[in-house]
Length: 208
Image (tube, rainbow, N blue to C red; front, side, top):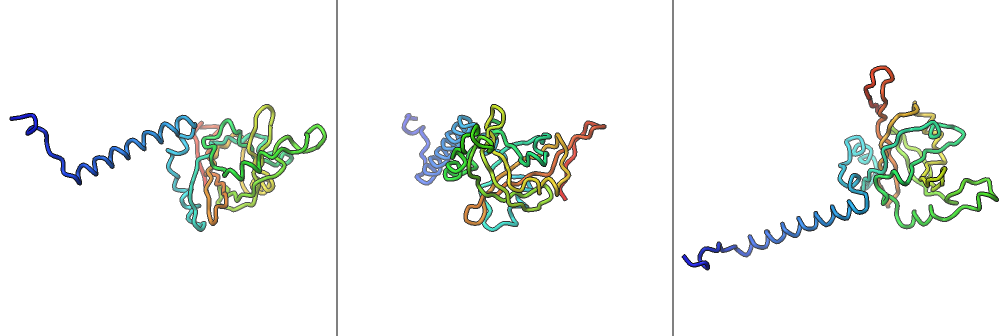
Protein backbone atom coordinates (compact mmCIF):
# COMPACT_ATOMS: atom_id res chain seq x y z
CA UNK A 1 0.00 0.00 0.00
CA UNK A 2 1.40 3.38 -0.95
CA UNK A 3 1.75 6.22 1.51
CA UNK A 4 -0.79 8.12 -0.50
CA UNK A 5 -3.36 5.38 -0.02
CA UNK A 6 -2.72 5.13 3.74
CA UNK A 7 -3.78 8.71 4.44
CA UNK A 8 -7.51 8.81 5.32
CA UNK A 9 -9.56 11.20 3.27
CA UNK A 10 -11.37 13.94 5.23
CA UNK A 11 -14.65 15.18 3.90
CA UNK A 12 -14.90 18.91 3.41
CA UNK A 13 -17.68 19.27 6.04
CA UNK A 14 -15.70 17.24 8.58
CA UNK A 15 -12.64 19.34 7.89
CA UNK A 16 -14.66 22.52 8.40
CA UNK A 17 -16.00 21.38 11.77
CA UNK A 18 -12.53 20.24 12.83
CA UNK A 19 -11.16 23.70 12.06
CA UNK A 20 -14.00 25.34 14.01
CA UNK A 21 -13.31 23.12 17.01
CA UNK A 22 -9.62 23.99 16.88
CA UNK A 23 -10.43 27.70 16.62
CA UNK A 24 -12.82 27.52 19.57
CA UNK A 25 -10.22 25.71 21.67
CA UNK A 26 -7.54 28.25 20.74
CA UNK A 27 -9.86 31.16 21.58
CA UNK A 28 -10.63 29.57 24.93
CA UNK A 29 -6.94 29.24 25.76
CA UNK A 30 -6.23 32.85 24.75
CA UNK A 31 -9.12 34.08 26.92
CA UNK A 32 -7.91 32.05 29.89
CA UNK A 33 -4.43 33.52 29.52
CA UNK A 34 -5.84 37.05 29.41
CA UNK A 35 -7.96 36.35 32.50
CA UNK A 36 -4.96 35.05 34.42
CA UNK A 37 -2.88 38.05 33.38
CA UNK A 38 -5.57 40.52 34.42
CA UNK A 39 -6.35 38.78 37.71
CA UNK A 40 -10.01 38.24 36.82
CA UNK A 41 -9.91 34.47 36.38
CA UNK A 42 -11.89 33.64 39.51
CA UNK A 43 -14.60 36.20 38.81
CA UNK A 44 -15.12 35.23 35.18
CA UNK A 45 -15.01 31.49 35.86
CA UNK A 46 -17.42 31.55 38.80
CA UNK A 47 -20.99 30.86 37.65
CA UNK A 48 -23.72 33.09 39.13
CA UNK A 49 -25.28 31.41 42.18
CA UNK A 50 -28.97 30.57 42.38
CA UNK A 51 -29.81 33.42 44.76
CA UNK A 52 -28.27 35.95 42.35
CA UNK A 53 -30.20 34.55 39.40
CA UNK A 54 -33.39 34.96 41.44
CA UNK A 55 -32.50 38.60 42.13
CA UNK A 56 -31.72 39.24 38.46
CA UNK A 57 -34.99 37.66 37.31
CA UNK A 58 -36.86 40.46 39.10
CA UNK A 59 -35.14 43.13 37.00
CA UNK A 60 -35.79 44.00 33.36
CA UNK A 61 -33.03 42.96 30.97
CA UNK A 62 -30.65 41.92 33.77
CA UNK A 63 -27.26 40.85 32.44
CA UNK A 64 -23.48 40.77 32.91
CA UNK A 65 -23.10 39.35 36.46
CA UNK A 66 -19.64 39.82 37.95
CA UNK A 67 -18.18 38.56 41.23
CA UNK A 68 -16.62 41.62 42.90
CA UNK A 69 -15.42 40.68 46.37
CA UNK A 70 -15.78 38.26 49.26
CA UNK A 71 -16.29 40.76 52.04
CA UNK A 72 -15.84 40.20 55.76
CA UNK A 73 -17.67 42.93 57.66
CA UNK A 74 -15.58 44.98 60.09
CA UNK A 75 -16.70 47.28 62.89
CA UNK A 76 -15.99 50.27 60.63
CA UNK A 77 -18.42 48.88 58.03
CA UNK A 78 -21.18 48.75 60.64
CA UNK A 79 -20.47 52.13 62.25
CA UNK A 80 -23.40 54.54 61.89
CA UNK A 81 -20.90 57.39 62.23
CA UNK A 82 -18.71 56.27 59.33
CA UNK A 83 -21.79 55.23 57.35
CA UNK A 84 -20.01 53.32 54.58
CA UNK A 85 -19.14 49.84 53.33
CA UNK A 86 -15.58 49.57 52.07
CA UNK A 87 -14.40 47.36 49.22
CA UNK A 88 -10.58 47.60 49.10
CA UNK A 89 -9.53 47.85 45.46
CA UNK A 90 -6.55 45.53 46.00
CA UNK A 91 -8.96 42.80 47.17
CA UNK A 92 -11.38 42.96 44.24
CA UNK A 93 -11.93 39.73 42.31
CA UNK A 94 -13.12 41.72 39.31
CA UNK A 95 -11.97 45.23 38.48
CA UNK A 96 -14.01 45.66 35.30
CA UNK A 97 -17.50 45.93 36.79
CA UNK A 98 -17.42 49.70 36.21
CA UNK A 99 -17.74 51.37 32.81
CA UNK A 100 -15.07 53.78 31.59
CA UNK A 101 -17.46 56.67 32.23
CA UNK A 102 -18.08 55.52 35.81
CA UNK A 103 -14.34 55.15 36.42
CA UNK A 104 -13.77 58.69 35.14
CA UNK A 105 -16.37 60.01 37.60
CA UNK A 106 -14.84 58.12 40.52
CA UNK A 107 -11.30 59.24 39.71
CA UNK A 108 -12.21 62.92 39.65
CA UNK A 109 -10.29 64.27 42.66
CA UNK A 110 -12.02 65.84 45.63
CA UNK A 111 -10.81 69.15 47.08
CA UNK A 112 -7.50 69.11 48.94
CA UNK A 113 -8.25 67.18 52.18
CA UNK A 114 -5.97 69.55 54.11
CA UNK A 115 -8.20 72.47 53.14
CA UNK A 116 -11.46 70.58 53.31
CA UNK A 117 -13.39 68.40 55.71
CA UNK A 118 -14.07 65.93 52.87
CA UNK A 119 -12.31 62.58 52.86
CA UNK A 120 -9.54 62.16 50.26
CA UNK A 121 -11.07 60.59 47.19
CA UNK A 122 -13.69 61.16 44.51
CA UNK A 123 -15.75 64.34 44.54
CA UNK A 124 -18.70 62.63 42.87
CA UNK A 125 -20.32 59.25 43.24
CA UNK A 126 -21.95 56.75 40.91
CA UNK A 127 -25.60 56.05 41.67
CA UNK A 128 -26.34 52.33 42.03
CA UNK A 129 -29.04 50.05 43.35
CA UNK A 130 -28.03 47.69 46.16
CA UNK A 131 -30.00 44.54 46.93
CA UNK A 132 -29.36 43.44 50.51
CA UNK A 133 -29.32 39.86 51.89
CA UNK A 134 -33.06 40.17 52.60
CA UNK A 135 -33.74 41.07 48.94
CA UNK A 136 -34.60 44.69 49.80
CA UNK A 137 -33.59 47.36 47.26
CA UNK A 138 -31.69 50.47 48.36
CA UNK A 139 -30.56 53.56 46.44
CA UNK A 140 -26.88 54.14 47.28
CA UNK A 141 -23.71 55.59 45.77
CA UNK A 142 -20.25 54.22 45.07
CA UNK A 143 -17.32 56.53 45.70
CA UNK A 144 -13.55 56.07 45.63
CA UNK A 145 -11.83 56.92 48.91
CA UNK A 146 -8.38 56.51 50.34
CA UNK A 147 -8.73 54.75 53.68
CA UNK A 148 -5.43 54.54 55.49
CA UNK A 149 -2.80 53.67 52.90
CA UNK A 150 -5.21 51.88 50.54
CA UNK A 151 -7.79 52.98 48.01
CA UNK A 152 -11.28 51.52 48.28
CA UNK A 153 -14.61 51.73 46.54
CA UNK A 154 -17.11 52.61 49.25
CA UNK A 155 -20.89 52.30 49.38
CA UNK A 156 -22.37 55.47 50.90
CA UNK A 157 -25.50 57.60 50.74
CA UNK A 158 -27.86 54.98 52.10
CA UNK A 159 -25.64 52.36 53.71
CA UNK A 160 -27.07 53.12 57.16
CA UNK A 161 -30.50 52.10 55.85
CA UNK A 162 -29.01 48.74 54.87
CA UNK A 163 -27.54 48.38 58.37
CA UNK A 164 -30.90 49.21 59.95
CA UNK A 165 -32.75 46.55 58.00
CA UNK A 166 -30.21 43.75 58.35
CA UNK A 167 -28.88 42.25 61.56
CA UNK A 168 -25.25 42.41 60.56
CA UNK A 169 -22.53 41.38 62.98
CA UNK A 170 -18.79 41.94 62.91
CA UNK A 171 -17.04 39.13 60.98
CA UNK A 172 -20.14 38.24 58.96
CA UNK A 173 -19.09 37.31 55.43
CA UNK A 174 -21.04 38.34 52.35
CA UNK A 175 -20.18 37.92 48.69
CA UNK A 176 -20.84 41.03 46.60
CA UNK A 177 -21.84 40.67 42.96
CA UNK A 178 -22.69 43.27 40.36
CA UNK A 179 -24.92 43.14 37.31
CA UNK A 180 -26.55 45.53 34.88
CA UNK A 181 -30.23 45.93 34.15
CA UNK A 182 -32.54 48.10 32.08
CA UNK A 183 -30.44 50.44 29.96
CA UNK A 184 -27.23 49.55 31.79
CA UNK A 185 -27.94 50.64 35.37
CA UNK A 186 -25.41 49.20 37.82
CA UNK A 187 -26.71 47.03 40.64
CA UNK A 188 -24.84 45.49 43.57
CA UNK A 189 -26.19 42.38 45.26
CA UNK A 190 -25.14 41.06 48.67
CA UNK A 191 -25.25 37.31 49.17
CA UNK A 192 -26.87 35.56 52.12
CA UNK A 193 -24.65 36.12 55.13
CA UNK A 194 -22.21 33.47 56.26
CA UNK A 195 -21.88 33.60 60.01
CA UNK A 196 -19.53 31.45 62.07
CA UNK A 197 -21.05 30.12 65.27
CA UNK A 198 -19.06 31.28 68.26
CA UNK A 199 -19.79 28.01 70.05
CA UNK A 200 -19.62 25.30 67.40
CA UNK A 201 -17.22 26.90 64.96
CA UNK A 202 -19.63 25.99 62.15
CA UNK A 203 -20.85 28.40 59.51
CA UNK A 204 -24.44 29.19 58.62
CA UNK A 205 -26.12 31.37 56.03
CA UNK A 206 -29.47 33.08 55.76
CA UNK A 207 -31.70 34.88 53.29
CA UNK A 208 -35.33 35.60 54.16
